[in-house]
Amino acid sequence: MGRETGSRREAVRLAAAQWVVRLDAATCSDADRAAFEAWRGESCENEAAFEREAFAWERMERLRAYRPGQSVPDRDILAPARRPALPSLRRAPWARGLAAAAAVALVIGGTMSFGTSTAYATAIGERRVVVLSDNSRIELNTDSKVVVRYAHGVREVKLVRGEAVFEAAKDIRPFVVKAADAVLEADGGAELAVRVAGDGGAVTVKRGQVELDAAPAQGREELKLRAGVAATYGGGVSRAQPVSDSEIDRTLAWRQGAIALNGQSLAQAVAEFNRYNRQQISIADPSISGLRLAGYFQTTEPKSFVAAVTSAFPVRASESADGAIRLTRRS
Image (cartoon, rainbow, N blue to C red; front, top):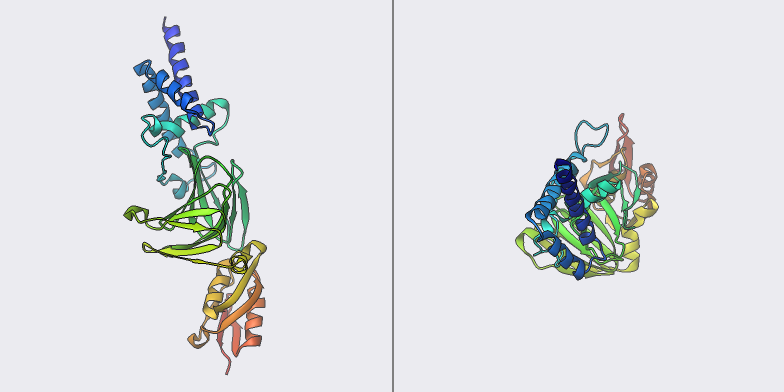
C-alpha cells in the first residue's frame, strides 16, 4: 500500500512538471491550456504538486548561480528579475510557477539550461559573440557584461555594463533588453545596439522595431523606435532622432575593431580610447580638449591615435613611468 501511494505521488509530481513544459512551449494551444486546467482541477494533490515543483526550482535556480570554482556568486545572476508577463499568462492562476516547474521537468530529462540565469562578460579590449539557445546573438564590446534569463515565456537580457549588439531571433516570446533603468522590447528579427553610460544609455536600431520605456517605474509612455532611429535616455527623459546608415556604421565600427570619429572632440575621443586600453590617455591642458577630430583608428592602438593627433594639432605627448600618455599643448 505504501509503495503504491509513493508511486502515485511520484507520477503526480512528474505530470505537473511535464504539464508546465507543454504550457511554456511556443506551440502551446488553447486546448492544451484547457486540458491542464482540467488536470489541475481533478484534485488538490495535483495543484499542490505543481506549487511544490515551482518552489523547489526557484531555490535550485539561485544555487546554480554559484559556479564551480567560485567562492563568491555573481551578484548580477542572483539579483531578482522583473519578468514581464505575456498577455495570455497574466491572469492565469498557474502562471506564477510556470518557468520554474518547466525547468524541473527539463532536469528530469537530463538538462538544466532552461529557466536559469547565465552571465557573459568581456575584459578590457576584448570582443565576444554569444549565440543563445533560440539562435539570438549578442555581440559584446570591450569591458561589457550581460545576464541572460530565459524564463516565464520571455527572453530577457540585462546589460549590466558596457555595450552590445543584440540580434533577436524570431520567436513567439518577447525579446527584452534591460539597460540603465530602461526596458527595450524588440521584435523578432530586430537588431539593436545598446550602450550604458553613467545613469543613462543609448540605443540604435539597425533593423526591425523596438519599444523603449526609459522609466518603467514611473509608468511613462513608451517610444516606438524603427530601423534607422537612435535614442538616448536617462533620468526618465528620452530623445530619439533618425540616423543615416553611415552614422550607424560609425557607431558600430567597434565590431571591426575600430573607432570612427566624425567631429568628436579630443576629450570624447580620449574617453573612447580609454575604454579599450589599459594604457590610459589623459588631457593635462583643458585648452586642447575641444579640438575636433575625424578618422578611423584601431581600438587597441592608442599610440597610433596619439601620433595622428600630435601631427595634426599643436599637441605634445609624454609617457609617464606607468605607461600613461599625457597630452598638453605644444608651444
